[in-house]
Length: 283
Ligand code: AMP
Image (cartoon, rainbow, N blue to C red; front, side, top):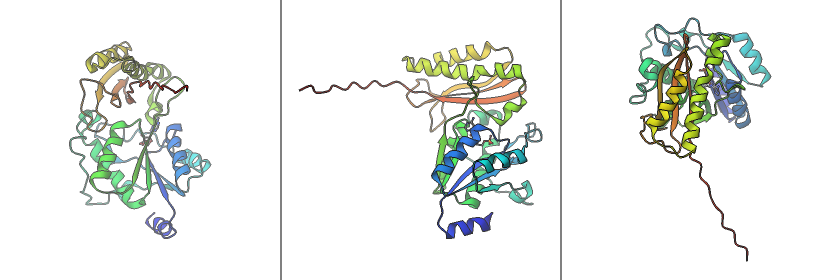
């Protein structure tokens, strides 16, 4: 990979990086397509990063569909697939990591201690190895995008971070590699996540800004599904991830909910509709 990048850098081509853990779906492919539009060369990394999984999490069960992933990426015209083995990324004696303080212990970090250290560390390594001009992430993993942007600014990494909208199925379920764990009934149950977020968005658009009132309505929707167990439901500031009491334009409704044994996350940016009246001149 380092040699390839050396060659590319010599010929001054722009590089777009899409980091993934594989088991690719249309959400990943939306990032790839955008990267193709904006760069001369696109690198997709496929690496199920052990550092970001807790001891009781699904590292071993995580879906691995490498051949199919490569087929999809080849159809999209991706130039390089980088799929290192864990000991190459973390050789014996590896002991350095990135701690996104203040941001890592909020939201998902509360129930997944160490997760965002693992994410930030692997992304930093990928950015150093591949030296992309642009790196593409999904808004679906909202906390991750906030942490990566912060890391890039804090450590002067000089790469453009692009966060792209969440791709959903036709019912509204956010695409995720972990949806493979859901039964058909659970897939229907999981629609409560999108329904709760849509409710929040609707309330804010209708002028409600009391965050407690909004999350209360979201909770009702989540709890109306018997198979669901909420981990968190909140409205947060998009830079600090602090819970807000008054929802403002640009704040984000976020939630993590267990459907059966599967933990799902989703979010929506809340927008206040602004009506601009143009008073034309009729002279
Ligand atoms: P993952 O393989 O789950 O680590 O995801 C790799 C990248 O794809 C991350 O930046 C995710 O946020 C992004 N991604 C995952 N699901 C979606 C989706 N439904 N829509 C858009 N991007 C997504």
